[in-house]
Image (cartoon, rainbow, N blue to C red):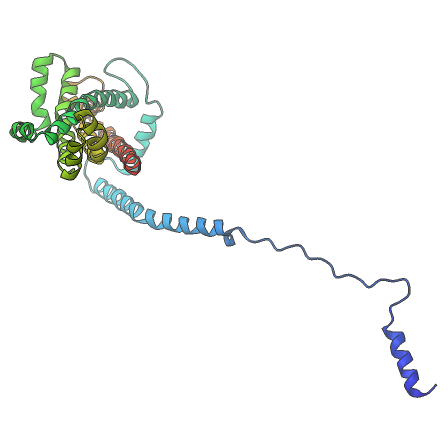
Length: 302
């Protein structure tokens, strides 16, 4: 055997696998799990969270500045309880908001509900009369010219100026308060509804005249859908006026209500409760207005 043949034999022997043994397989690695925030849904969540944080920063800073200014005024010698004292009084007050120790000693929850009841009744009557009257004023120019001086004369009158008239005619404080709410909240609905009707394009009314539509069909098919955003704007403005007026009316008429409760706490020199009532009135008014804005947006999209 020559040297070349010997080298080839050795190479083949070293390259051949061992008898009876298989080559070892490479271990399989588990699939890599995509982190949550690298997925499409996670990226959208992070983006939405970033927008929410950016939107929350200005109001949070504003509230912090307000509380700091409040604390500074309270610590400067003014006879006003600070944020800490007011918070402690609020916790105690709302720990039992629905107690009832008689007609003149009830929890703040009952006072809020009674005020909302009066607002609901007065506002409801204002809507039942004000919205149809606004449609009629906007639809018929003769009625518009007839009612315009009356509305211009009565609308600027202070709400509390109507209270003595209500007490004289109705003889009781409860209906007199509802009367004040009614006469104060009716004007935004009348004026906004009339403005909406007057802004309907004349072409729509010409088509209705050509088709010989009845007044009922003109109202249901043309006027109401087109004027609905104006009506809801008037309703939103009116509920704010109604809630604003009830506090002043209840201060003068008494009974169970947030306005009377504020006046009673003033007589007791409980300033912390007065500040709490101010926040309660603001929060309830904000919730009422925001709720009506959501309803308005939904009807506008539909």
